[in-house]
Length: 160
Ligand code: ZN
Image (cartoon, rainbow, N blue to C red):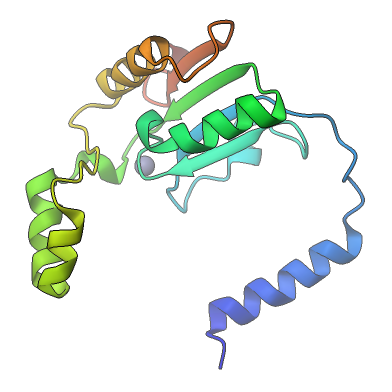
């Protein structure tokens, strides 16, 4: 029996698919933002259908998004990366030790062993985290050298 969320997704996607006729839109630039459920990237950043690959993860972390960025650049032609972090991000509220303790408490021991020293990439300050991610994107050899990269935070409302 599908959960209520699964039933809603199936119903809404069927409605969306019925009306979808934009399969021929051009290849877009890449954008990264947090998976925070309160963020609607299309509305918040003026992204129309076909405008961007939006890579979302906890904290809008570049390292976490790298797999998708490489695919976006190498197979789909992306030449610009816009990284956006936001005010009130949940990533500001915990440390690696905190999340590891929660995992240890809630999951079987094998889970902690499997995660090992995984860095969950929490950060204590948004603007510095944007600067750190920009530095990572500019030094990694996995991003094309001609890529236009910018970082933004909703606290500053300006590029860093
Ligand atoms: Zn967030």
